[in-house]
Structure formats: structure tokens, C-alpha cells
Length: 380
Length: 75
Image (cartoon, rainbow over all chains, first blue to last red; front, side, top):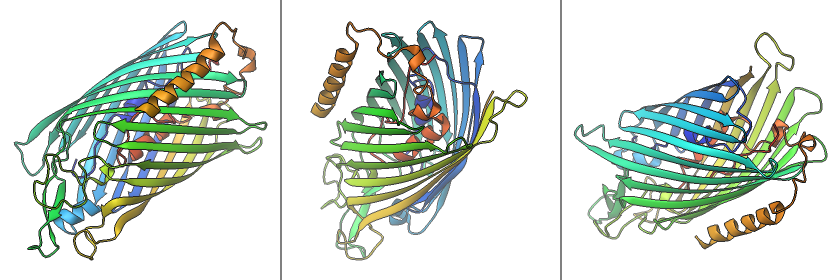
């Protein structure tokens, strides 16, 4: 885990809980290479997905995902100087979808492992098409159990229990437009902080003007998120989508993000282009501080920049080339895809503690990230 | 939390107004455009899941991602 928060849920929740009732997902295979570089962190790895139907009513998928992390992030630098650490995380997911009339029942299992963090999640979802297939309602539940360890302390072992409740409604608005709303509540209980991360407090006897102590989070966290989105087929063959999401939690964080995306197939050629913009902003957790006045200043202590006040802008581009428009052997079609996102993060109350200027007087931190996805997809 | 309730109520009101007692106004044979892959909120699930992971690892917010889901009744 080190200083990179683990999240093993994104893939699992993406697969069985997609609100696509009454039609099983297409048989396809994807091989993706992902690369992230930003803020002194590099993450690279593969993701392989294979989905296959079994008869007319069942569809199963398996996914293998890996993160290879090399980090010399600002957190690591503040705590241990300019040292760099490496970490590896492997994740396996398995899903089954069962179709009966206008209903799809989905089951999923996800397992994520790294040297100091394991996570197992099971999920159940049911998706129902109604009102003449104009409306699709999806309800799902997932339950996770994590174990938090510490590489530098072999007898350290803590746990986290997680429950995820989701309700989604998708509505056909016209022959050209679809809208959707998703509501999700997550509850966590257990050891929620990072066993390595430190907070800082004023100590004039130190050369840097501050000293460090371990962070300490509350043992529970409840959050609610709602997202509304729409997609519109333009008068020519292209689509425009927009979405808004609002988040609030029991730690006092309020966040929202807006997205706009445009997809443009190039005439009758094999090429499709994507462009997107995303803006995200959040307020800080109530117990967060960049610099506490004294040691043990309050019960809960956090200096995780993900809990601070900040915003980010994402500019994304994608290109896709269909290399099998005519069926070949068992393959119906295939595509080669490249996506690039440029993200700029700007923090309002998180200072660069590695820079000069005295404790609390350092410049505010900001960084940019480059995110690549290169993948091949085949349908069969 | 009030914002969540407000958005939910607005959407549900829209849904009820559009669905109650009215026959489906988009017939199955009129859904060719909706079935086009470019009308999917999440065209490539592996790529979308990775994007969500990138954000969730670096943001306080989590869940109910905008790009998840879909469903056009296009079978």
C-alpha cells in the first residue's frame, strides 16, 4: 500500500453493475496497457478482460489487472527524504450475468493483493427493463473485506469492512437521447488511515520548523454520491455527453465534478475520435490540516492531500481504429485504441513541505499527470 | 445531502412525468441511433474502469461515476 491508497473496487463495480438490462454484454476480449506519470509517481501495468456468453442466458467475464508502482511522491519525500519505493498490486475479478426475460442478475467477485494490503469484494446486482424498454432500473449491493498490513512491522494487521449500495435509473428520452441517474452510498468501518502517512505540526526546535507524527482517522466513514448524465446523438453521426456528480460524506468532504465528452467517427472510415473535459473540486475533511499547531492537537489527524481542498482539470483525447470491419475466422471485428488524459491538480491548503519558506510558508502544491491507455479489443 | 435530495427529486419527477400512463414513445424500430456504440456512456469497460481507478485513488469522492451505466432497451 505504501502511500498510494488502494482501491480494488473500480473494475468489479464496472462490470456486473452496468445498467444494460435485457441484453447481455457482447462477447469481447480486451488487452490494455496503462501508464500514469505525475507528482513523482509512475504506475504501469496490464489489464486483460475476457467476456464470453454461455448459451443464451449466461455471460461470464474474467479480468486480470496489475499496477507496478514506482513512487517518490511529495508525501514520501517529506517523510523519508528523496527515497523511492516500488510496489506491485494484482487484481482478479470474475463476474456472471444471468438474463431472464427483461431482467439481468449479476454476481461478481474481486480479489486484490499487494504486499501490505489485501481486499476481497463480492457483489450482487439486479437490472430490470420496464415501460416498454424505455426505463432500466438497477439495484446492487457489494461487500468488501480488507486487511491492512505494514511492511516495516510484521505483526501489524488491521481490517476494514465496506458496504456499497447502488441504485441506477436509465431512461430513453427520445430516439436521439438517453439520460441516467445513479445514487450510491458507501459505508466503511475499521482502520481507514494509511499506516505509513504522517501529519506535521509546528516544532521550532527542528531545522524544518515542524515535526511529524502518524495520522489518525475516524474508524467509520459514510458517503453518498449522486450522478446525473445524458448522451445525445447529433444530427450527423457523433455523440455529445454531459454529466454532473455530487458527493458528500461524514468526514465533511463535499465534492462535485462535471464532464463533457464528444465522440466523432470519421465519415465512413475506420477511425473514431474522442475528446473530453472534466472539472473536479472538493472541500477538505473537517479534521484535515496541512500543519497542526502542536503534537496530538486533536483526536483525528490527517494530512492526506486527497482530503484537502483542491480542484483538478482533465483534458482527454482518444483515437480508435477498427482493423476488422469484415469478420475473419471466429472474430467479428476488432479495434486498436489509444487514449491520453492530461490532468492538472491544484491544492488550496496543502503546501509543498519539501520546499523552503518556513513551516506553513511554503508554496501551495500543484502537479500535472499524464495518463495513457493503449488497448486492443476484439469481438467474437 | 440536500443537493442529493434535490437532484433525485428532479430526476424522479421527470421520470414520472415521462413514464406514467403513456405508451413507450420511442418504438424499438426507432432505436437504431441509440444502439450505436458511440451512444454508450462506457464504450470500453476496461478503459473506463481504469479511468475511474485513476480518479478514485487521487480524490476524496467515490462512487456513482458519471461514465458508468447505460441501457437503451435496444435488443
